Each structure stands twice: as structure tokens, then as C-alpha cells.
Image (tube, rainbow, N blue to C red; front, side, top):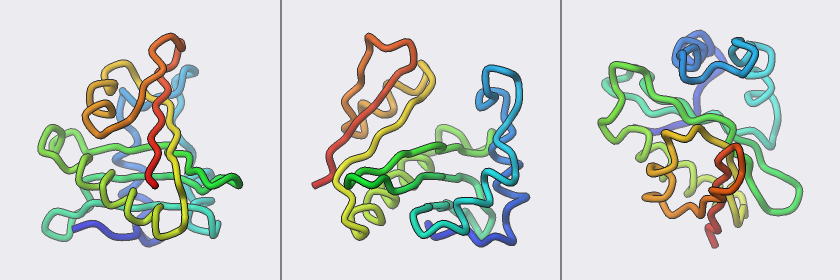
Length: 138
């Protein structure tokens, strides 16, 4: 089941985001204060996929001023990877974004996620040092 994540679940969100593959270049992780912004902003999205009422995947995004949406994170707990939960959550996010009149999504991601985003219909700028993905959701 997918739904908006409640602020009371922030520790569960942090746990999922504190994976080795999600570290910043300086070795740090997204900070709690930064994450909390997405609960407070009308432009923010903080969505989750729940398996038996346990949060197993997180998506953080924000609406941009020109009809777009920036997808900051999509992460699945290590023990639940490769089960399709991230894809289900991404599809749910697209529906939510469309309901907010968003027409495109932008994201930067790791090289090992390129195939995932291509399968989901994103166009990848493979000449960039960071893999950029774009998808119109008209």
C-alpha cells in the first residue's frame, strides 16, 4: 500500500535513507532537518510503500515552479530490494504528481539505477557525469 508518510514516522524514513549507496560524496546522509522540510512544505512529497503496515520504501520529491517535480530520493530498505516496491511507489508518485498538475519529473541518480528509470519511461542523459533522467507525465 502506498500513502503519504506521517511526520511521526521520520525515524523510519531516516533508517531507510541511511544506506551506503545513498551517502553524499562527503560521506554524509540526508539530515533530519532537510527531510522534515518535505513534511512542512505544500510543495513537498514524502510518500511511502508499506508492506504489512511496515514502511519499506520512501520517496521524497518537491514541486517546482514551472510545472515540474524534482525527485530527490527513492529508496527501499535493503531486505526488500528487488521485489518491485520501488516501482510501485514511483507509479503512485506519478499519479499524485499529475493530480497536482505536474507535467514532468527530473532526477539525478546513481549509475546502477539507469536501467530502472529507463524501464519506467525516463529519458536518460548518459553524457552527464551524474545520470540525469527526465519524463513527461502529461
